[in-house]
Every structure is written in C-alpha cells, then in structure tokens.
Length: 117
Image (cartoon, helix red, strand yellow):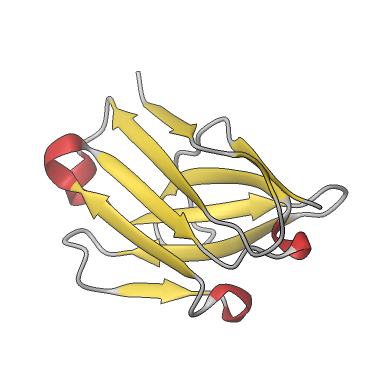
C-alpha cells in the first residue's frame, strides 16, 4: 500500500516559518520526481514546487520563489518543504505528491497551514 504522510503544518504568524515533511512508503521513492501542491479554502489545487529524483533539479511557482525550498532525503524516503517569510495567501492544505507538477499518481492526506496574526 502506497502511503505519503505529511506533517509539520500549523498556525503561524505572517513572516514566520514552517518546515513540512512527507514520509513515503510502499513506493520506490528514489525513482520518483516529487512535488508539493496546495489547496486554499474554496480553490482548486495549485502546484507549489517539484524536485527531481536525485534532488538536482528544482522548480517553484513564482509566488513562493525565494521563500520556499524543496528538498529530499532518499535514504529516509522523505520529502521536505522549508517555508520562510510566510504570507496570509500561503494559507492552504499542503499535499505531498509523486510526479512533476500536477501530474500526480499518488497524493497524501495533506497538512494544513494557516498564516494569520
């Protein structure tokens, strides 16, 4: 059974930071490009960032460039998203997903992030 389990979300003030983690099981993690996608209240899914199998290629949506960093630890089958300088518009449920962009075969249950003062 494939499982992607996210953690690290929560309530943070504008300007704050959070680090999201996603532990994968049931898949050969090191063979897969991985992504973070998010869904804000009342909106559709939005691609946030993707990383290649070895971690050498990363991409970000324009609104998070310079603030978010995606990384991975293939030995631990874990995907990360370091989020700095958070803004209220970053409020969403964040999902770990296999594949590049929004072409996702598997997606986790999500971890909520709320940015509010």
